[in-house]
Structure formats: structure tokens, C-alpha cells
Image 1 (cartoon, rainbow, N blue to C red):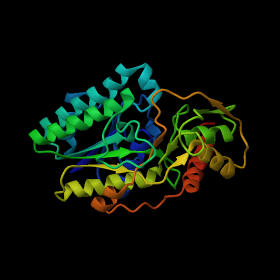
Image 2 (image 1 turned 30 degrees about the horizontal axis):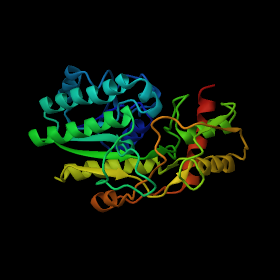
Image 3 (image 1 turned 90 degrees about the horizontal axis):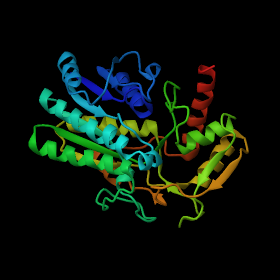
Length: 328
């Protein structure tokens, strides 16, 4: 019995691999290394370089390693990029997921966990969303993820496979042991961008939109520490293995912070008053997106351990300093 982690050389996927190997699981990582890093893959896992959409390759991996579950992280994640290059997102997120699901069904995989996104909700106002909130994604990124959610439901209705979907909110932070973190040099994640600016790796950073209907005019998001997010995946895996029903869950703390609040926290943690410019809104960005997180707590018994913006920022900032030394 082994777990296949697609995108396991990336930010969130590499943390999943660490969680699984720490728990003594046999893990196979499948990653094309377009955005991931082979050095981020835990040495206890088996690494295969290739595409998650390669049906024959996935079937061979399942057969060779006795894969019983797939946790699918591979995909493209930048909302503004999806607006200008939608076909990339429907290719990398929807078409590849479709092929991966076909391979899983043909090979007899029992359980499938999918990395989805809060972007499936679209513009929701300032109130926290719940899983039953109407779905109205504003970007090709959100639509490409929602299409995979629909495919999963249809496949599970037709074949003996159960699934779990976790809709992420804004993931940030790094492994407390500095074994992994957000390592893409030009990533667009707010906390990473702010930390890099504090460390002098960027001349300045930009705030996109200051006229939203939020308390301070900037976007509000529900930031979640990557370690807590991965803990939810591990609980979801256990839920499916023990015969639990297929489920879709929001993974969030239920507390939103504005862009200005995040920037101020990074400045406080770093002790650097770096340059911040204000610009127009970006296409596809809702004013606010937070979630109650009640269902994931009740179904999985998830109890966050790092629900603190300062702690999230401190771990992200420490990881950026670690990368500076590592990449010299």
C-alpha cells in the first residue's frame, strides 16, 4: 500500500510528502518539475519525473508501487495569469486531472484527494462562505478547479472510488523545521512577496486595489498555515480509508486579514519599513473571501495548531532567509 502525491515537488505537495513519510507511509511523488524542485522532495519518498496527465505512466506507477490513494496537487495556481492564458489552466488543471482520474479508475485506485480552491466561490461579499454557498468562480483558474470537482463527483458515482476535496483559502508559512516552504522565486503569494521585499530581494511591492468595500479598502483573505492545511489532508485520508463518504470541505480558519494588515505584520516581524506602492485592482480578485471552517472541524476533527497571522509570517520570513543562504 502506497500513496501517490502529484505535484509533490511543489510548495504544498512537498509538505504533504513530509507529513506522510513522517507517519511511516510509503510515498511516490510524480512531478514534472516545471515549477517544483527535486531538492524539496523528501528523501524517503520515491520520485518519478513526468506528467500527472500521462495515463500510461500513472497506471504503471500504481501497478509497480501498489498505489491505493492519490493526492492530487499538480496544477497552475495564479489567478491573473489564468485570465490572460485560460487555455493553460484548462490544460494543466482540468485536462490533466481528467486523465489522472481515468488512470486511477483503470488501475483500481481506492481513494482520491483533490486540492481545490476558494476561487470556486467567486464574489461572495464580506460574509464567510460555507460549503453550500453558491459557486460562481470569477476566473479561469477557479473554473478549471470547479470542473475537476464536478468530474470527481461523476466518476465516484460511476466507479468504486471515494474522494475528498479540500477548498483552500490563502496558504502561507513553512515547515517549522525549515524542510520545505514556498520556494518559487517569483511567486505571487502576498506574504512571500512582502517577506522578499523586507529582505531586499525586491525593490518594492504593490497593493492591487485600495477601493474595495472592505474595512480598509484592500482585499481580505483567510490565511492558513501550510502545516495546518496538510494536517487536514492527513485526517481526510484517514476518513476515506476508514470507510468515510466522499466529501468536499473548506479549509480555513474563519478569520480574514486585509492586505494592509498582512503587510504591516511582515514589517513588524522583519523590522523593515519597506516600500509599498498602491495600484489598480487585478482582474479576477474578489474583495473578500473567508470561510467558517466548521464542517472540516466537525467531520474530520481538525484542530488548527498555527492559527496566528504573526506565526504564519514568522515561519514564511524564516524560510525566505533560509532560501537566501541555500541559494548562494
